[in-house]
Amino acid sequence: MALTSMLKKGKAITKNPDIIIPHGSPSSLGNFLSCRRKAYWHLVRRLTMKKGRLSLEVGTMWHSGLDTWYAKKKIMPARRAIYKEMDKIIATGYSSLDSPWNIAFTRSMLNGMLFGYIDRYGKKDLKTWKWLATEKQFEILNFMGSGISFTGRIDGVIEILRGSNKGIWIVEHKTTKDLSYFSVESIKNSLQTLGYIKAAKEIYGIEPKGIIWNAVRKPSKRLKKNQTNKEYCDEIREDYEARPDFYFYREQLIIPKKSIRAWESEIAMVFLDLAFCFENPDDLDIWYKNTSVCDMYGGCEFCALCNRGEKRSSLALYRKIEHE
Ligand code: SF4
Image (cartoon, rainbow, N blue to C red; front, side, top):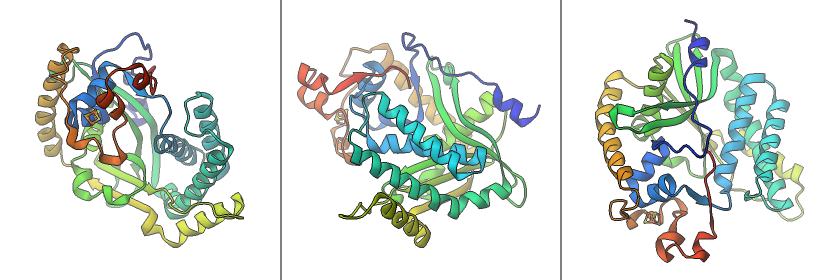
């Protein structure tokens, strides 16, 4: 079967919010491993911060821009895709983009990132990459016999047509404020890397050679007094071009089959632990806290609930997750 046809099959995640099948994605498994209570707030109580996080919103817009760039191979449609995604996010009413200034700043920032990215990678990629699939959601039911679905979304599947890296690869886009979060060792062992390669095989029957970790640092420069948005955008773009090593990080790693097999036996145990917790959804002792990670990555979003309990004032900061 042709690769593109293989990628068209596969089961989509249920969109019905009333049907909550116990599930674990790489990020929710990461939550579970770092703090079970965090996974409880997310997976059992289905809570999220009422107000969106700018870092996540920027990531969503960035993905739309890159997806469109690789699909249309032109910058204008990619910019329009970013703006369209921004409008969608603002229309939810929960966005962090809640002032004209925030909106203008974020638009300028994403424009600078896009111009810089295309200069650094985008044009070169088009010569050797064949983009096979974008944003592939997957769900593996009853993963490893745990009764829990393994879910996720693969940012991209590409084929490299020539050279020593010829073959199928998974692409993972990242936006970050600090590229030092990523290293060869951390990417090789990432739940996303191993889980997505496993999912590609299980759902689509394809065997990627490995992962292309495609990270971009968000700019730390701020709009100066008396500087126009256009001047700011130009400054960001020039900075991306002048300091590519500062802003971009791409790692292309072959992942051997034996690494996936080793991961499977370990992750099976994590899924069994998670299944046990799901069987006891109201027992908070089982979904115990790990308070040593509360302040990691800028602070856990559930601090108010953990510290103050489920009072009206703390619950007012959250809303129900309708779909993921
Ligand atoms: S605030 Fe701390 S204990 Fe509570 S969920 Fe977050 S990381 Fe866990």
